[in-house]
Length: 607
Image (cartoon, rainbow, N blue to C red; front, side, top):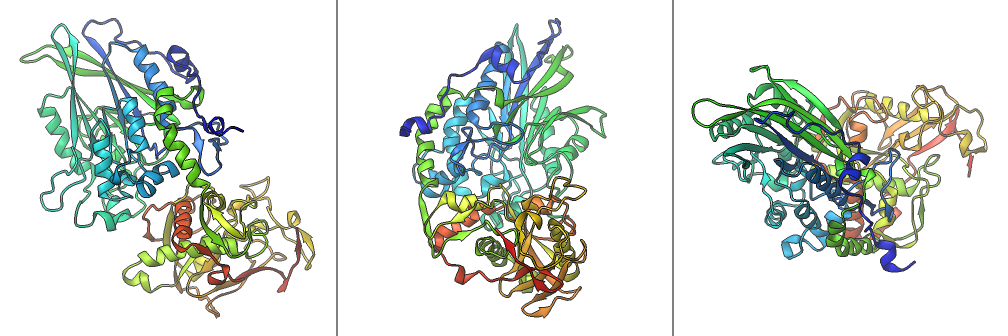
């Protein structure tokens, strides 16, 4: 297939009313026929994570998922342009809630390989400038590549990056613009003044401690909003919109060590005079939600569009002009929101053309050789035996966690979980590409670590061992007769990604899985460094964020103390390890630490 054709992501764009209709747009009246009533449209995106095109760089194909979603700023622009056209002449505000410059090989390449700090223009800057954003809040992932990269990106975009709660440690004043104020001329001497306050995530102080410590602090969203919302009202803002890189459902992955990670609802409840909040960070879709402010009783609108550009939020804030002493003021009459689906429209040709060359460069990168493998390593039998390619994942994860631990946790043994995500994954003997490594870890998980006891560790392994069907004798058995056992929660069979194995870093964690025994009584001979694990023994367990947040329903890890959460993508961590070390040699990390047995005797499983 011709080179240019294979890579082209341009298409004839569906635009205007047709685009809106296809995206699920529900038309709303502009001003209900009242001459002193005006509708402000707020268009919002969040968690774009470096996605310009509807493209999966790891699969070298267009993005697809089971829900039929499509992604990218190029599609976002088509939707936003369609709303602007439909509401031509009305006041419109376009904002983003953060996590822009990290998340894809496209973003990584221009942070690390051809960094924007050395002259390149970030593809997200090119794309977002063409969309025409008015402002964007800083996300926590903006800090992953260092402050110099953030500042360079800030220079390259045509809109401010807002962070009212990213402050100087000495002065406690924001080191990024805290807000913008936009004035809309509505004609006949009427003016609407809108303030947009940007808030980011306090967890940056933990997740990127090495980058921000001593340079920036990140106080709570509520605390800073209580300072700057009154400032915006004093400046004459009729409406105050917050763009918050913080989820709506109050929780924190880091406990009580810092102000809440997901605090958008708390801001709505506790800070008067907030009219609406564009929510980010949680990667969830909230089409429309109302939160009652406890002080004023006002209903505050919250909306969160789905991540990566899958959705665009459209807020309708209808205001009515009230005359009185001084300048007539606008009073919020109603606030509603909807989300538009990107999978019904084509990519904007201007955005596509602007980033096409960089896209092509990155495709070459992901198909490039990053190292070599001393031997062929296959995942095909990872569901029935301890294979080196899964040991590699556990080794890299545990090594990264151990290097970051401090205090008492640094003295604990580090162990790691990994699952066989793809039986087709392999490293060929010889040259290994970025895509080879990425094919081993196909999900967008980040690395975490929790503290667990020996008793909890055994419970975890027993839960994982539900993956196997109960069989007697030593076989040989076909793989299908042993694996993917049905359960109450997986009646069609437990998927491979819910079979976790655990390995040690500095010493072996060994155990048998007795498939002849009933569920809950299958883990035997559990030992660390050749010594039986005791119930009270403590370990640091490297896990992915999916598991730690409850994915798969595994016990203990959701409630265990989190000791590491730097929000490092595991897939990129593996790629970086190969790039740095060049040779993947199982002799350095692989060993057979678990096995399937029946009554203590090893079983044989055929292919």
